[in-house]
Length: 131
Image 1 (cartoon, rainbow, N blue to C red):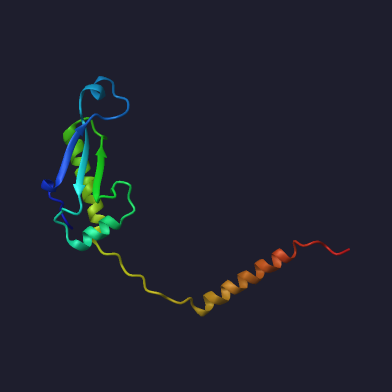
Image 2 (image 1 turned 90 degrees about the vertical axis):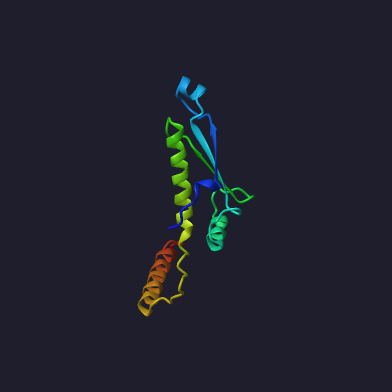
């Protein structure tokens, strides 16, 4: 398990969206987390897998942007954003298991062909009835 150093992460406090009354209007409790993948200390293969992810949180410049506004306090949102970044990195830390090509068994082929012929007979009955 890789640990993302907090020194490589940039936090920006912003105002949270949504309902909440005066607290939302006055306090910057939401957090934007920015993490530059290219400049990080992650191993090269992990960086490549992270950049290859089809995730809306990763920009074209290779920066991970996470917005955390689940909690009312900035410290909790900061910890939440860091935990979400860590989960993203952990997801790509393990290399994917390569797929091994296999062939269908003889019985599977027979079952497939049998179901195809049954389907064919069903559809053949849908035609016009000769008079």
